Image (cartoon, rainbow, N blue to C red; front, side):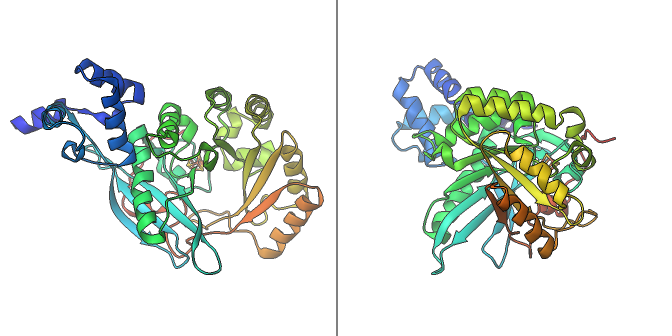
Length: 370
Ligand code: SF4
């Protein structure tokens, strides 16, 4: 290790701090409170990666920060573009392991080709421990949590591309990429605070959705945070027996416990819940499945997204056939469930969560699966 390496390793990454911690750190350097707001704005609103760009700070202060701190930023490693406008990115994270995570931009267009809604799906972990049988990320196992800075980096980088490509910023964020967001609770909550901070990315929390496989303790905790975000439950089966078969988490946190947590969440936040339901051919698409799903949809005010599955190599479950989808939807609608079909996007690229990272040689990490 040479002298530069030694110095670099001692430097602190400013994006590893929460907003309060950043303020404390700068305060300890003898800086007035408004300086902390300025640095926060440079980091997150303007997305700079060097202190030299912080032009409203004195040269002396910039040099001082440069001596003791760094600004890490996840960098784009590769991308795949689909015919339908979906773009999947692989971001390389800092660190000796060269971990990579995926993020996807999904534009929805008006008939005249102008982007109406631009959704970004971000990752919160490298890999995932929960081993859902239909998920490419689940097959990879768990490596590490992302920091809040690494989550915000994905949004920032894609925001820049969105403005260039579609002439507008992203409109919606979903935490549905690699990883289970509520298993990386602290970083996810802090990233939401930064994204919705007027001095950060200034996005309305109502346009941010956090998804979970159903970590009941964290759902209840999230309800108390007062974030104003939306909650989506990755349900994918409407009875314990079928859910156990495809989502191992259900064996320890079953539907009865999920109902209790979701009910608690609704009474705290008064915010309806969304259920994500991947419809698999001849697995969870029968009349009985629809009836079980209707019961769940009535736990609290909710809507259901029926999602068409992007088939994953080596996974037996397959995308539902059109006639079976139509029959399932008719039963939901007849029973007054608010349900929408989400068609697959980016089918001509590795759009299923985790597929691109696996292609790029991500190895196996820890898993709850034996
Ligand atoms: S679906 Fe979500 S929770 Fe399940 S294995 Fe994939 S990333 Fe993990």
